[in-house]
Amino acid sequence: MRNDGDEMNDDLSALWQTQPVSSIDLTAVKANLRSERKKQRVFMVVDSLALVPALVMLYTYWDKLTLTVQMINLFILIFAIPLLGYQLWLRRVAAFSKDSQTLDHLTQLTKQIKNNVKIAFITKHSAWSAIVFGAVFFAERYFSQEVPPEKLVRMSLIIAGISVVMIVWGVWAHKRQQRFERQLNTLQEMANHRPQ
Image (cartoon, rainbow, N blue to C red; front, side, top):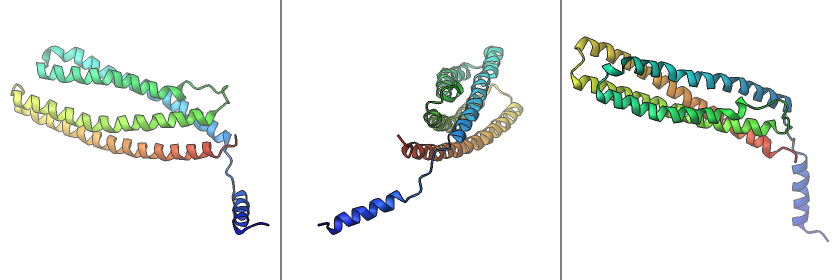
């Protein structure tokens, strides 16, 4: 003798089994991973080369900088070099993935998208910190009174321009972080519905 609970379980089971199942498009995932690999390699080169102009400028103008500006620049370098290493580490998953490893493209792509969320987070926060360092640099130059007024005006325009660029960069990084988080959720849902 069946009771109402058994019938309801059977009805729910039948309903659940009629639900459409979205299959994973492995070709699209592979293509996405290949695209991600190319992007991450380019970003690794760009990230690494971005430090070169700063190092050249510091080397060229070191003797002309005040002790405070030298310390600010050293602090930035001491912070930037490990951060660059960390970003390169985060980019490695897709940058060095192999096409021959068809074992689990979805897992590889998911790992890289998680890392992309972290990279976007770092980029977003480096944007506002660059504005703070620019303001500190300008304040030091202003209060040291070693810089002529006409150079201060030019410097303030340059720092204002850089600040605007950093604000736009920060907003862009924030939107990228949100996009990567949505993409990560989609990939994780695909992984959860994958047949074992």
